[in-house]
Image (cartoon, rainbow, N blue to C red):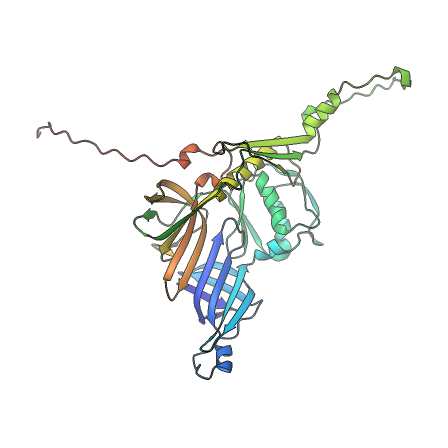
Length: 395
């Protein structure tokens, strides 16, 4: 059951509702289909139903599903329609993290450049003016030597570029917090089976965004161990032009090796030559560049194949379906018999379908750290039944 509060007051004027939590969209979204009783009563003489206050842009919205809070946000869009028998409106909005996508990160009390800072601390500084919390569920690795914020970038892009290099996901919990996590740490509320508990299923597959080689190029702060330290000779005198010799290039090569970082990730499922090069948005050493290249390859793989299952209800034994959870899938039609990752959950309730949930699932290695585990992309072998010994005699 979906329960909607508008400006802290229970709102019952909706005929359909959708709440979407998507790992690829960052901010949770909602959509309400409503009868606008005020407008109907003022326009259509036959309307006598109880009235709700007019829904306005900017109104605060809180949504619970089966008693669990899943979204705190605002109404951002409103459209209305009137016909001979009714007047209705549709409102849409996002959770509080929507502002991190739309706005600019560079504000007076946020430094344009941070030094020796861990990812979670950088995120806290970036989102602090918006009153948004940060929760880190994983070790984010070494601090960034320098974490810069471009003049025109949004808080989300300022956060996401650092998350790429640390191979973590930044997600919304829907109720006002940024969550730093990795893929599939928790189990889903239930299992998916077709035939079984699936009402409908659809699949989308595309290799448009996948590449045989993904390369990330960046620069580090200095040459580090690649560059030796020059010793000063206090007794030396300047050389005459005729006494100077040209460089053999070793110093330049050492400097380039230390400051130019390159990371490579290959996708062995793409047979033809399809290279793609990205530039790191933050200072990156070789390890960080490789991590980002793997992150981009894995994310592209996840986007290339997605199956959507429609399930009855919003929860299983009191636990809601959630994104970024691992779910066992037994799908005879699509030939799947393995654990998959739920990447998107959409809770739906309307007069036609009742309470249903749309689950988008993908391969669990799609958002994981490092090289994909091939066994995750293979079906589980069927368990062999032990043959009966027909020659055995009773003991």
